[in-house]
Length: 68
Image (tube, rainbow, N blue to C red; front, side, top):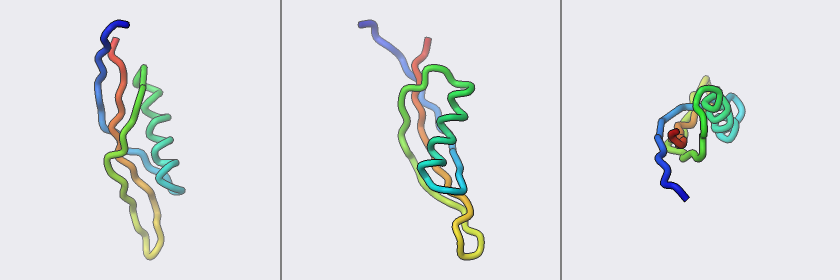
């Protein structure tokens, strides 16, 4: 098996529903322009509050992909 090299980038996903959806939204959008995505790591979870309610969930991810 040949050696492989990966690159890691950081992205932020958002959702009005939950952290899981914010993660899925980020991966889905990144896959439109980044090829060969292979893994992700959650770096930070945070959100936006409006009044007394959660308005938005935000997840910062490190995403790894294989270089050609």
